Amino acid sequence: MTDEQTKGEEIRSRKERPTGSMHVGDVDFDPEHPDFALDATWDEVCHACCVHDANGWLKIFAGLVAVCFFLYFFFVALDFLGSGAKVMCGCVAGSLFGDETNPIAGLMIGLLVTALIQSSSTTTSLIVSLVGADTVSVKQGIYMVMGANIGTTITNTIVAMGQMGNGDQLERAFAGATVHDMFNFMSVGVLLPLEVVSGYLYYLTKAMVKGFVPKDGESWEGPIKKWVEPIGKHVIIANKNLITAVAHGESCDDFYPIVCEDPDNPTYDTCTQVGLIACDKGSGKCPGFFQSDADRSDDTLSGVVVFIIGLGMLFTCLLGLVGVLQKMLLGMSTRILYKATTMNGYLAIAIGAGITMLVQSSSVTTSALTPLVGIGM
Image (cartoon, rainbow, N blue to C red; front, side, top):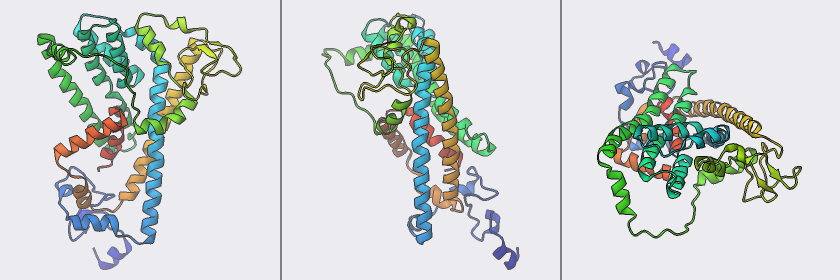
């Protein structure tokens, strides 16, 4: 290549650089290539991170604001998906619970309920309440919890499918999403037969709670939930009490018709009986999709609409998030990225565990990481 060509054209391939380094946005960009893992110095990382002119800092600030915007509504979309699924499939999910003696049946019940309502936290909470009420045995509850841990892997797979516009990104994102899947599959594959043969989890948990005196405790809400729920509560609130009641043997139709003292101005206090959609206990207000004259089919349809809205928001925010991150990283040497993001495996496990405990959702953590894997970070 001549000097005139070099000046007139932007270098877009590692083969055209004297150092042979790979940059994000190259036509031959490939995170699987050995050149991606070429090491850089921390001085190079700090220089790439912190040394910019005024225009560069302005672009970084605008990019971070855009990332935070898309990430926030990405979490809102996940909340819409979960709430919509609970309303849409709450009656069916609750009726699936039962004290089946077959371990595989228990596993499949936990898997299906979690897949339907898109929340392993809700499923495990239901299982705990059913075990506490002696509706489900402890042994069967163990198998249901195992199933819930498999069902929770569906959300990040949906997120991975949002990158279908780019075959390479879809392949990487899907591979990243299935790490969560395979980990849970293999864990259940090892623990389920051991539990069936020996019952070691049952006897271990029995020994752990020996002499335990139950008492009322405080509930804890993760920060992500506190930031996201205000929007979700204005749109739709799933009635978890209904799902629990159906799981205990009641009928979904027992919650209809909805009874409100003032149908034109329904509130939490004035509505003594609600269906699949509930009102907010804290503010006393009812969400936008709450209808005082709704029947079961109306509420189910509302759940379907919110689920579709959440799905559309999810893919839109995912495309925006990936696009912004790609523009921010465009032209950066992969040596810098590799050095900045590579860490000890045990430290990575600790960070993942800490983030999941903080946000109280493995689906949120894995769904946020999936697009980053897709773009090659």
